[in-house]
Image 1 (tube, each protein chain N blue to C red):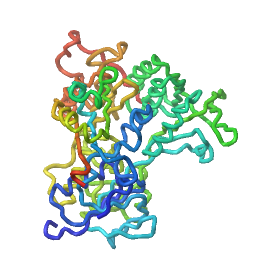
Image 2: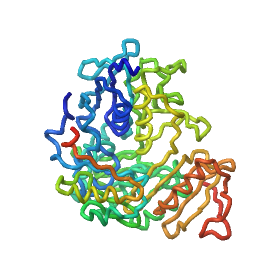
Image 3: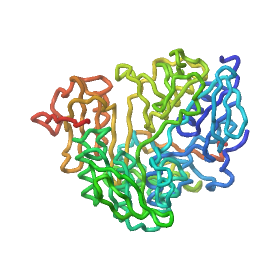
Length: 423
Length: 81
């Protein structure tokens, strides 16, 4: 491949696409490179969108990522990819054009899961938060001083928006069907600790509840009705129901892909419906589902910033023809800034059967929780205790015994073990 | 080769900064080096300015090299585009 560079095409223009493009170039690919994005914007950083863009500290258009210049790339922005023809090796765009490729990186990411009722979802005052334009629109609504903000969904984005509303002095209610915020990812034990911190800052939590429908007057949101028959007046609602992977454009391409992502092998090449890798195509970032070596090859698709960077780089090198030294095996990590609170994680909590508080004290609002499964450490979550996390990450990467041997420095009598509380 | 679509109509040219907040452990050295562009909120939440003006280059560069975990990335678009 090094002698015949051919054409490289990257579909998607987010973080994974950008870091993939950089790695492709850095690994020596000198042929034509085209990057296709459905949004009109060059790659931008998403984490500030749910934080300092919403507070107004930085404008949404200041989030363009470093690395956009200097790629010698042909940017095709504002036109979505609609189909992939692997036999002809070309991608069809929404504007009718087709783009040929010899090396293709699929990095189409995710989109916000919309409110299930499309009419209600389009009401003035109802928002989702995924892209730069979403953040700019929500910022405008928050800056106008709404009487009340309703956050629908207590995942990470929901918790970030709710806590930020309190920073802005806005009354906010968070409605979450689970028993606590973040219960699906962190379990209800740790979720309850974090929920209590947010309640202490004035977030009204309505857990174990769901919004049934949204009422409007003259096309503008006025009230949310909950399944228990109660209702609350609100002029802004933020729908934070998670993300949907952008794989529809791959329908008919013969790849193993569904709403959970496009499947890759351990090296990073996409798999066809027969499970055979396509050596011309790699995938990276939120949309890529791959067997994770640290978790016994369980197939996962990770919506994490650091994963988009690391897997983007891995895929870029792979497409440049550089043989990977090992399967992609980066330990999953993420962070979430919720108001002034920093929640960080290493590893994956799925399947945890125990959790231990290994540092700090949940009642004090600063702690580290270590998750175990079948006697091994699988994940850790820090709350305003980030400096303790790398040591825990080493335990997880090493699949160290759980509970960990040796008392933590502030736990001379050993650690208490809790039920993690996954549904 | 065309430039990104909104480079001409979007934000004015300037520095681009991103911080890997997975790596960041709130040592706050950047806040001392470039206090107008980096600050710690609460115990360890880093705020940073992702698009500082070019004339602030020296302060931003001091912040970048001061970071004990090398979490800060800086770029000047006009030098590399």
